Image 1 (cartoon, rainbow, N blue to C red):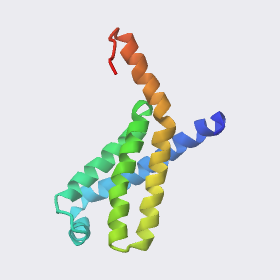
Image 2: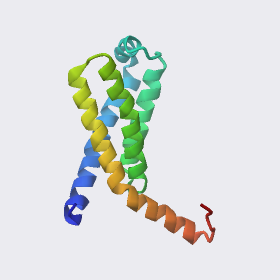
Image 3: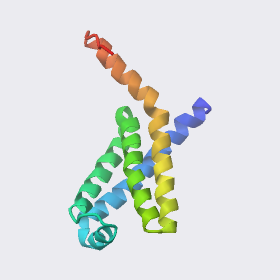
Image 4: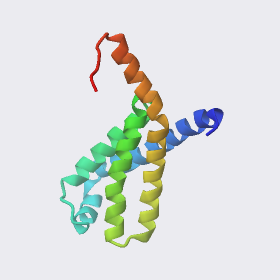
Length: 134
């Protein structure tokens, strides 16, 4: 990917994804009753509504912090694997594509930012004078 396009597209995608995860996460925490029936119908416990909301908000914040953007993106992609699987099992065709698109976008942001995150933590490790063993 062209470096100039990458430098423009990835931050914009990260902000859009952060907005999506913030919206859904806040919705689960602010109005859990709306979500409890859905989660129970999907075979998930009621308490997972709050856990899901918290994870989505934490991931949204992580997407806005450049040094951990890749970790947040990849973590949210893994989280979305569960959402896609749930929608597949319950034949919610429209939501399969919505959740799948969010999964792919999260994975792309995470993967494309991974070299920068690795370099940052490698630099920290080198600056501390510690030698890491592999």
